[in-house]
Structure formats: structure tokens, C-alpha cells
Image 1 (spheres, helix red, strand yellow):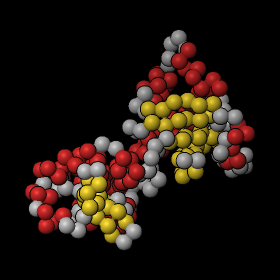
Image 2: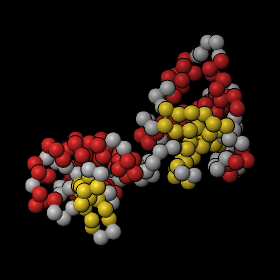
Image 3: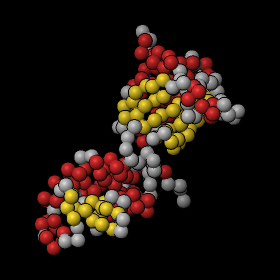
Image 4: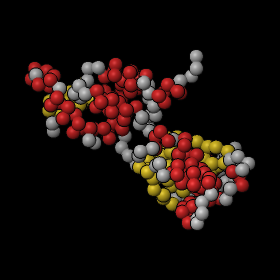
Length: 241
């Protein structure tokens, strides 16, 4: 991070690539904060901006301002500082010092119209599709086969191959996992793909495309459409007509 008296800026990075930027001017009162408080406020701004992507996932906050943890040494917190610590406690992140010369967003702080503190947030996680196929979902899918009568009829399974307990469907170059008839399981898969930090809250067409890269079930398109229609965040962000 680069200290500034005008405002704060942040970059969200995944796998070394910037995927989102944000900036916010300090209010007159905020411009009177100490440098350490302004740096912390920059982080608070970034956490609020990208809460839906970061909450519940581990990530790293990189900054070149060394005293960022000064609040932990303050004998008595004021109300503002206490609120900040309480809000940050909702997230699973670690601090990492980053030299200003190495900051991937350092150039933004030099922009004459920005004058912002830069916060580089690096998420450490797989893509949603990779996470789904390599996580506990595989075990849930295998368990789901046992309770789905469709998989008990050998004729239904003739077009597919079984690998490590998973039934695989080949569609051109795609290798798709056949997902059993389990509403909760299917919804959880769609939820992971719909809220991928790399893609944001994707629409129906994109969600179907992402899902079909790795999964298949007969009602996938209809389920994806219903999921997006029921997503509160998506409905709130729709423009008024």
C-alpha cells in the first residue's frame, strides 16, 4: 500500500492477475485520521467492496505499510477502531508485507486523479470448477448414486464410463461427471460456479456453460435458470424498468 491523504484504492488479484479495482475518496474527517488508520480504512473499503467474493475464503492482504497491525497494540480502542476489528474478524486473511516497488497496483497511486492508498488482495484458491471437482463434492456425488434409482439400471449407464467411482460422460472433448438426482447437491454445485470470484455472479447462459464444462444432468439448464432467478444479490442488482 502507498499512503495518501486523499483516498484509498485497492486491487483484487488472483493467480497473479488483477481482476478488479476500486477506489474511494476520504471524507474530510477521514483525511484527519493517522496514517495507520487510513491504511486500515483502505482495507475496510476493499473488504466491503468484495465481501461476496472474500467472505468464507482464505486470502492474503499485501501492503507496504508496516504498522498496519498497530491497533492490536492500542491499550484502549475507540468505537471506530473496535468496529473495524470486529468487521475484519469476519474474514479469514493473513497479512503480508509488500515493498512499494513490487506492488502490482503501485502505478495507480501515482495517477494524478486518484491519489489513493493501494491495497493488494490476493486470493489463494482454485477456480470454482476445479474446487468442485477436487473437493468433497466427489464423495457426495458417489454417495448420491446409491440413492438414485436411475443409476441402478445398467442400460442407463451403457454410454458412460466409471472412473474412481464417478460416472463420466464424454461430449466431444468434454469429460463431464454425471450428477445424481439430488437437489441439494446440484444446487451447491451451481452456487460454487455462480459465485466464482473470477466470474462474479454470472447469468444463466454463462452458468450453464461453466457447469457443462465438468458436469451433466438432464435438467441442468432449467436448474441453472431457477437458481439465478432465486439469487437475492442478482435480483437486487437488476436495473429498475
